[in-house]
Amino acid sequence: MGAGHAHPLHLPGTSPVHRLSPQVKVLAAFMVVFCVVATPRAAFATYGGYLVLLAAVWVIAAIPPGWIGRRALIELPFVVLAVLLPFAQGGERVDVAGLSLSADGLLDGWNIIIKGTLGVLTSLTLAATTSPRDLLLGLQRLRIPATITTIATLMLRYVEVIIGEARRMRIARVSRGHDPRLLWQAGATARSVGRLFLRSYERGERVHLAMVARGFTGAMPALDERPVPRLEWTLGMLPVAVALALVVGAWATA
Image 1 (cartoon, rainbow, N blue to C red):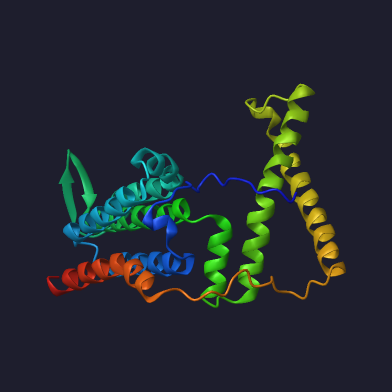
Image 2 (cartoon, rainbow, N blue to C red):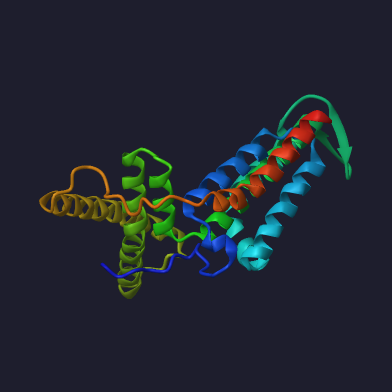
C-alpha cells in the first residue's frame, strides 16, 4: 500500500519540460486550453498553430507522437457525437460527397472535435511530463482549495486499488464459468459492478476512520513550499505567450 506505482499517463524523463516546477506546467496547460476554447471556430489556421505548438513541446520533452496518439483515443465517444451534428442540425444545407449536411452542424462538429482534441492533447502532455504526486504539489502551490486536492490525492492513490479489485472479481467470475462475451450474462456483470461499488465504499470508510485515528483534520499536509525561480516561470509561460498571440490574431482577422 505504501509503495509507489507508475501511472500509465506519466512518461518519466529528464527533459527541460519534465524539470519545470509542477505549478508552472499546470498553469501553462490551463492557459493554453483557455486560449483554445476562446478561439473562433472558423479560425482553421490558428488551430494548426496550436498543433505545431504542442508538437514542439513533444519534441523538447521527448514524447513519442504514438504514445500520445494511443491515449488520445479516449475522446472517441465525443467524436461520434460531433459527427452526427451535420446530419441532425438544421439551417442552411450544403452538399458534401452527395450528402446534404447542415453548414452550421459542420462548423459545430469541427468545433467540438478540434477543441476537444487539443484539450485532450494538452492534458496528456501535462500528465506525461508531471508525475501524479507533482500534479498534486502544483495544485497545492497554486492555492487550490484543500478539499479538491484531498479528493484528488485519495483518488489517485486508490484508483489502482479499485482496478485491482475489479480484476480479481473478474477472474473469480471467469473461473466459475462466467463468459463476459455472452449477452445473457450482462446481469452478472452489472451485479459485479454494484458489488465493486459497495466494496469501494466500505474500503473508503475504513481508510477514513484510520486517517482520523492518526490525526487527519480534513486537509492533506503541504508537500513542499519552495518558491519557483523567475526564470522558470518565464520559460514555462512561453507556450502561453504563443497561444495568446494565436488567439488574438484569430480574433483580429475574424
